Image (tube, rainbow, N blue to C red; front, side, top):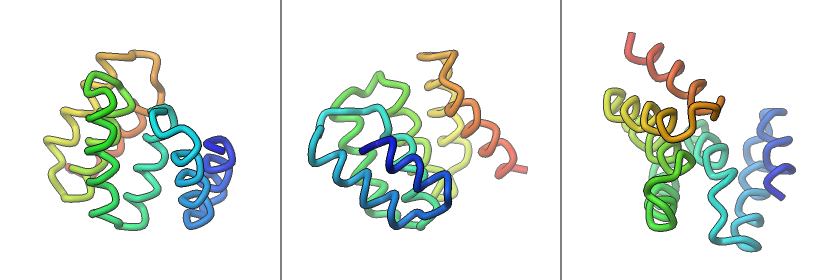
Length: 114
């Protein structure tokens, strides 16, 4: 289901992607992989409250996960707290240097600061 959500996300069909990620969460509530894209969809839809809830859930599952760091970073980014968001994206990169999406989010955040 996460891959279906990703496919909808890539086609910029955020509402469909959001539904797929919610179903994926219902099936596997403890799965962190994919939450970074779920959070990005919420960011694009400007769903601040939902994004904060997702960030809280991610941190409760594993605060030391690069996925959690990206989710929290997206939450801060939506609130225009770019420096804090950048710290979380950089932390995700420290935890998993090969996590390409964390590098992408970090680059977007640097651009948003300028």
